Length: 95
Image 1: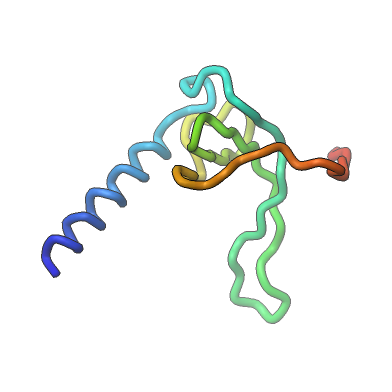
Image 2 (image 1 turned 30 degrees about the horizontal axis):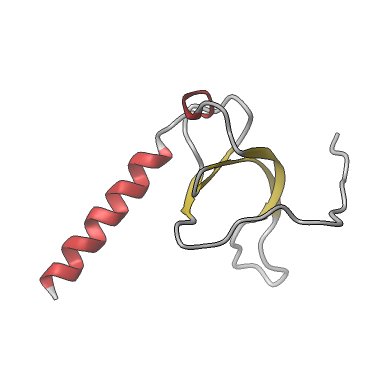
């Protein structure tokens, strides 16, 4: 049980350190752009949708509050997942 707790702490620390990277420090991205992400909400209607700047770099997906952010709002490790470009996407212009 102790080893699993230590492993969780190491994984959490790794994810937190990856969130400290700025958009600029990531360098050239494999793919990047604006996406809507639903924030968790406890209201009857659920969470609100918010726009974030997403950056895919190798097997790491980061999201930021804007294109020049100094720290990621979140990070997902996609290692072990298959990533491919979607076909037939709808594009929406944002003001």
